[in-house]
Length: 336
Length: 288
Image 1 (tube, rainbow over the protein chains, first blue to last red):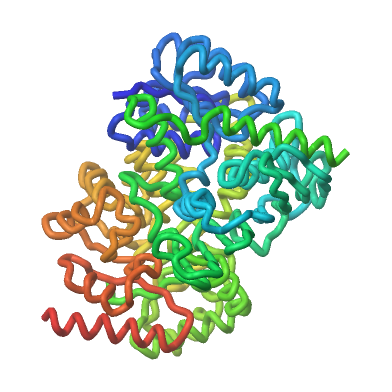
Image 2: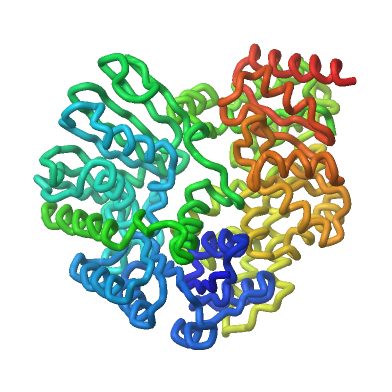
């Protein structure tokens, strides 16, 4: 049994708690949140041992690993403290507010030899995994261009401000929403190393951008367009699409459906010439407990298995999430 | 419950395999009249139960049904609550307590919070009851013999070990609405264990059941064994496995399983409703 504690029982934290609560190899030893109503509920109905001070929780419950799901502005200090205590850490995304903070935590995690993972759950979505496999096989020829898009209905009218509407706390479309698709680009193609120009658009929010449009260049010199808008109510929920264009073919994929076009026969495995369509249902392995999508269960299971030494801790490491933090900072600078 | 239940995903652009199809559906069912037309087509093929989420637009559909009691005599609705995206988006925007403040009627919450009055355990139960009442308002005057808890909520509480909330849902819909509780889940065997432990005998459980094992958490074998050996009133949904199985083969598999009381499916076209209905009847006759 792995002893796990949770810091931050908001939307993502409670989701993680439910999934881990059902995990056969996990014992949830403690939950820490500042909200009395959340703590009351979780201790009364979930029988969890709840705390309002995370240091107290760590001292008393002695976990092996900790899930950090507090607003991003608290990540650096809390994660640093956890790493110094030799604890394995799964942090929500985005990783840190600045690349400098992230760099320090990467080194510390390496020194302490602890498992480190960030919650970019799209890496565990079958279609995006297949996009990466096809791209890495080289069968698309020379990659010339990509489009990274994400749209959804988070802020569809002017309204009450929360931490999500405060850029210094990790809010805004760029940090909270665009980070997902930037992270996919970093992983599937190559890390973003240059930003030619960006527009941050304020549609309904006063203090944070609701849309991000950007021209990116990757370390392998491939260029692409980023287009993200969280104020688009024509989408029922977040929809992320990656398009990759090469000399021998093209891929368009979202989280449900993968479409691959090859100019030639026998380009890759059993893919045919012309359009090939595959669905996430064919590409996703089942999970033991399902809450909101296989990927949420799969990423936590991967973390648990990394801690117990069954898998290598190579997906969604602090290092990979740091590339996304760096890209976010470059985009923000280029928009000024 | 009737053998065939008609679902509503197609009306609200819920498509598990294609964002493009989902947009096409959203265009097709833009007007309520298109939803009613499809419901009438389903009724033509003998389907008299509509299982639907408590989406805002369902209120309009209920209004149409209420206003034509002759035409819709014998028509039943199985409400599935809550429409989770409404609350999920609200939590993103307002936080957990802000969401409760917004959706719990009568602002009971604001008054309870004032002056740091401690939240007593029974208050969570009363909040749930108030939310159920709020969601049920649109169905006034309509026959709703089974009321479902949506899978994201069922499974959230299941994972948290908040069994008491699930049990109370079961009791409350019986007391207040004289209805049976149904539970939608992606974790059927585990849920059945929990409900049985809580004293609910022979519960109505709606879950993914299909030939490819799609969204059958814990595996297809465990589901088949549970259906064979345990006591539950199972509803099979996602029988096409998200589109991965040819329809006839998909229906044959589900019809051959023991203990499946009803099959839930949704379709946008008359031809698809007809084909699926006929397939179910065909395999049911063979299995008799």
